[in-house]
Length: 252
Figure 1 (tube, one colour):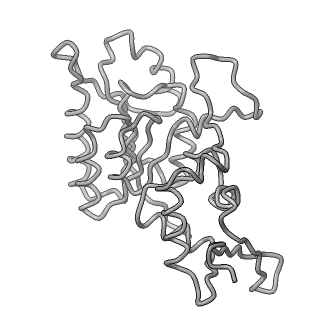
Figure 2: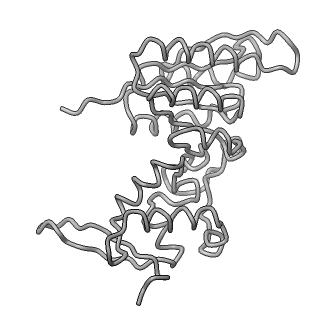
Figure 3: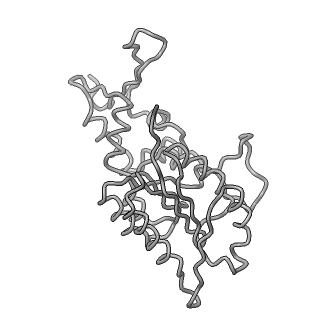
């Protein structure tokens, strides 16, 4: 029986919309069991009133932090102290930091230095420093897709992540260099690379998630760029197949 990772989920309620809570909980479940779920903020203020229903529905513990100074977010220090306390218990395999605040960059780095995995969840506005400090970072807007596939009519809910076009993807030099570098690193003598190995190599060096570009699968994103050849191979003698890709620059 597979042992699931024990995760501590810490939510900066001051900077995250409660409309994203359902999608967040479902996403976290893909990585492990949320042994601890805490949301931080000043629960005496009306700004967090819409969060209260989510706390009950998803068994999230509210952590009270009074705002001692006007205009200053006191949630950060409380969440960081709790994270370090949980880290020192050595009972967890990883942390899920749900925030768009760059102030948590050092916390993510410190947790990773202890050998634990850090999953980051935030909005598109999240600074690159925090994204890079996490093993994996997911834009919450990329998760907020209505179940019926239609656009939500509730304007209070954030829009789903739009797919980037081929031209937009190819103009993203950082993305293309990341893809090409990963393919080259794991390719065979003929330049072909298994898509699973490519994905693993990317995960080892960045917080990349294809959904942040509007694509559920890495293979679909790569196909959209039209910069790589793609080939299905049945190497196991059953109905399953493996997908291999090759940089078109090196095609004879």
